[in-house]
Length: 205
Image (cartoon, rainbow, N blue to C red; front, side, top):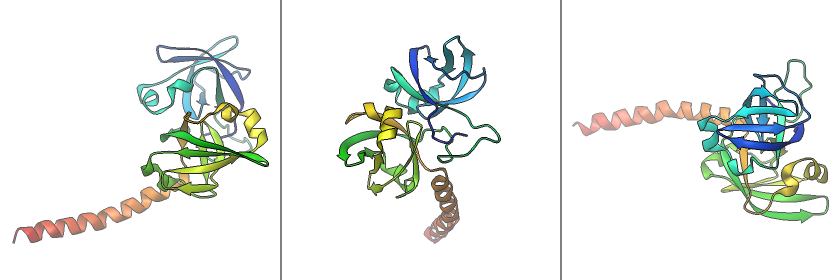
C-alpha cells in the first residue's frame, strides 16, 4: 500500500528486456515493493547508485511506457507504524489518462485530463485520484475527464512541471469508489438475472 506522496524523482538509467534500472538516493532491499510512476513493482536487484525492477506483461500493457525515461516518480510501500498522509493507493493502474489542456491560474495550474468513460464512475468531485503516483484532489468532473489544480510546490517537486498537452499519464482511481461501485453492481446482478430467467421461461410458452 502507498499514500501517493512521492519520495523522490529517480533517474532512469536503462529500460531493457523488461528490466528498469534506476538511479536514486533511496536504497530499498531486494524484494521490496516500490511504486514507479504509480505502478507497484518489485525490486529485483540493488545497485551502488540505485536499484532494478521488473515489469510484467500485464504492467507493460497498461502503463505509459514512453514515460520510463529521464525522471520518474518513486514511492516505497508503507511500513507498519508509518504516518499516513495522502490517500490509500494500491499501485494498481486502472487506465491511461491524457492531458488535454493546461491553464494557468493565480496560485496554481489547472490540468484537464481525459480517461476512458467507463472509469469515470470511480472519479468523484473533491475525491482522491492518483496521477503517475501523485495523490491529488479532483476539482471538477466531466463526461470523459476531470480537472485538477496543481499548486506551485507540487509543480516543482513532481513531473507535473514537465507535462504538456498530449502527455499520457498513469491513472489509479479512488479505492473506495471502486469498492462501492462493485458492491452495487453485484446487488443489481441477481435482480437482472432473475428477470432474464423469467423472460426465458415466458418465451417457452
